[in-house]
Image 1 (cartoon, helix red, strand yellow):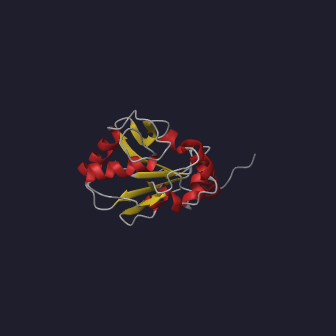
Image 2 (image 1 turned 90 degrees about the horizontal axis):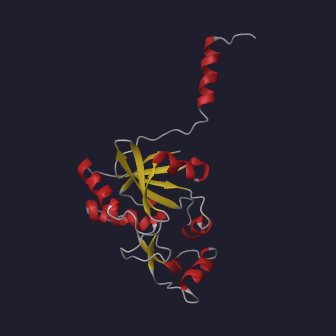
Image 3 (image 1 turned 30 degrees about the vertical axis):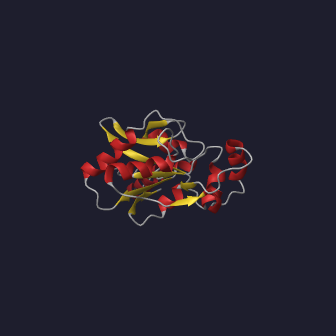
Length: 198
């Protein structure tokens, strides 16, 4: 078998490695988004007008990075598992501008205090259960004194797909004036800068 010239050999190695997803340099408190593969992801995407349908917070731990997220419950998910779970392994990482390490750690600690609480299928704003973007917003409010995202009434979302799920959860009269914060409102927040997308 003929041998490749060194330059072509190195190029072939680079092409072979390029199929592996690039990994971001994560920091405590980074806000990480994925395109969820959950059953309600398509409805959430349509409702908010963005493909980034799930969000959590990075925690850097001695054994590697985790994502504190509201899934079935509020949990710590290893970064590799979080990334692998999303569609196409795609992630968006946003970082709050101007926060020092102790403040970022305080944000993570605020999120960790909610571990074990159930996912809030009714998108309420109490502390007995959490949905994903609610957990992130409250962690930043409580840990850093920073308000992220924007609250909008359910009726202002595109409910063509999400509507049936709301009727199943609330009955014939969903509370359309109930305010919610969506992952998309975090993506567009000017207090956050993009640290990675891939």
